[in-house]
Length: 393
Ligand code: ZL4
Ligand code: CA
Ligand code: ZN
Image (tube, rainbow, N blue to C red; front, side, top):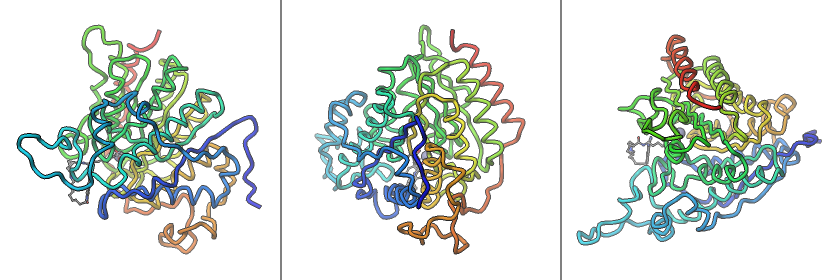
């Protein structure tokens, strides 16, 4: 008996399509869609599926994709060839114009299908919140925060988050977007730069010359041009390598509580990029599952409709641990699931770290030197508090 029961009077929906994992960015590319399969296998092994509504996500339609993206970009995505085009001086390769085909955003077989499935899951999740059929909707295949209106960027082609938030804005006057991926959520910030109906808050490593995408300084709070309602509605929390659970939790809770008090959102969209975990292949933070997931727990306690997106995460066994644990938080079972990974979990050997009894919260990774001082963190909270004086009625 799994003992995982449905929360009473509370609905969680899980939006996933196993076809997403069939797509490959390339052998050595850090983005592994297979991490979604590993996540789903852990979620199911714990019996969490019995406590949620499970939906096989559909592909987003052309009309849905162009609700944000430029139609010439989506047209091009639909027709791109996996092989590089021959050089033609008369007609420059349009792949370049859309930032496609480089090492970050390669062209691969089924690319359009992959993008549409990610978008479809996030749209379905947002609509379940809009119709009040879900209190929390989960789309781990989404969270692709760098994609621009007419350009791919940083492993992201279609900005499923923007598509989802546009749905939430049909019902809610104000939506709060929070981003705990180790990278700056530049694409979502840019999409809502000129509206005061969406506030974006990104926590990220900031080192403009050495770390992608190089934007998201503390002082960047939305274009301060005259009559721009979106001014002051972008919050950036620039961090250094090695931040730990205690510091991150304090920053997150202090900042998000103040933001919610001032902005009074009707719904929250949380991007849960797992590259902010210790031991990530690209990120160099020291967060454990406990610290990362405390952000989800805090957002849930705010009691607003909540959508959870995936995002980055480049050490698949750690990604699956975090997103499975965060699924447990959504259904309220984080304190009663066994910490030991169930013996019948498919690919259980992939979770083994240094013991024969792998647990859900265990994270592999040499701790990185913590380069965040309390003085700097206090300055950040002070700056954010001052920005918030310009926000709200
Ligand atoms: C790789 O090994 O910093 C891509 C990308 C492909 C395979 C072999 C090609 C080798 C690391 C990254 C050449 C790789 C050169 N392969 C990559 C400025 C850069 C130009 C491209 O989590 N080179 C660009 C993007 C970031 C840059 C991060 C995070 C997404 C998200 C949400 C996107 N781009 C320098 C890097 C490899 C690769 C190894 C790589 N790319 C690491 N960081 C980047 O926020 C999903
Ligand atoms: Ca971030
Ligand atoms: Zn990232």
